[in-house]
Length: 449
Image (cartoon, rainbow, N blue to C red; front, side, top):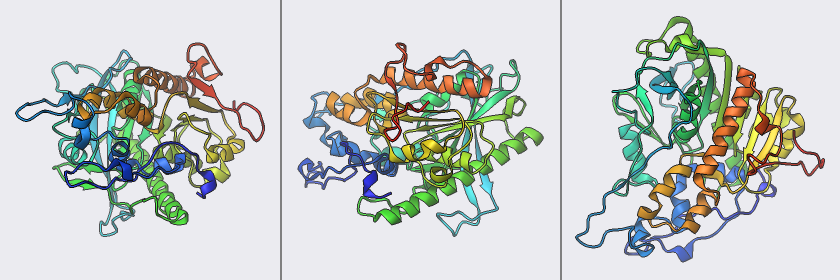
């Protein structure tokens, strides 16, 4: 994208230089204007963004008395907790390694096949007595905490609400399937608060780890593959950035295609080790998708590419690829953070030939659509973050309200297009969800509905 697509906000990924004591030299931070496109390509350097805002374990002691221990004082890490799902179903989960031998890995050509992980979240029975599956697998978590903004010693990562390999809930028959694609540099559980909620309402949700695009992916046996794409620095020429990001979306779409192929194989013929009843409840004739940031772009491009996806949701991701010029003829919901409208969204709007909505969540920021929305407020005091610093990263809207609105919007959208339920919250502005602003296209002056 050219610079005309950039909108001004306070985000930055410039890493401040370190002083001799290891703390950040905040005065050296350079603020840059970012577009949604730029924000979605910096997901792998979240810690730099918060460091630039003054939120960093290295500087915690200078911000709040309770944030760091004094000599001889032991302050235990904060145990983080994911918000409870709101549906009536218990949840089970199962991770699967997929190997697409039809293609070499596009980021690491020495690998003869494309290898990635998926995780299935589904309505389950007899979860009681099983340990809860972790938010992130152990070896991946160690890498994440060593390089991210939720470091070990300051926080303990949360568990999910799902029982590993619990038998699927067959009562209620076959259930719609929803795919999830994470943001650039993130991981398959980046928006687990949304994923688990959908599973608790009776959907089968499949989250995808896009190897080498994700920050880290753990495979069976404990092997961890870390970020392996070319670095997307602010100094990168726009044309080169566009080439790399365009390739990333194409790789992701191929990952989604292969995931659907393997899910179909599992339903038809079974897969060794799949939890009891899971193949019997997946209805792949009703498949939808959503994603955050680059995952939202992947959702739209996968639909444009003709994959069997009934409907899709893009959570604050600039559109990339053929969808911008070709559009799509199936339902697409665009949910943006509270900043000026993305140019690619305006470009594609006339080319959306199916059901369409274009809404903005007031008081949100780009990472409000991830679990950072719920986890960072819990960790704020331990990390030494002020309310103002926290709001600059996940927005001023109270996190529980933001999550509640997001969950309601997703449940309404998938209920409408996968189950035929009414969705009044998506019909237009309501007193029930005043934070949702239904955007107008300034080129036509009409509301995008």
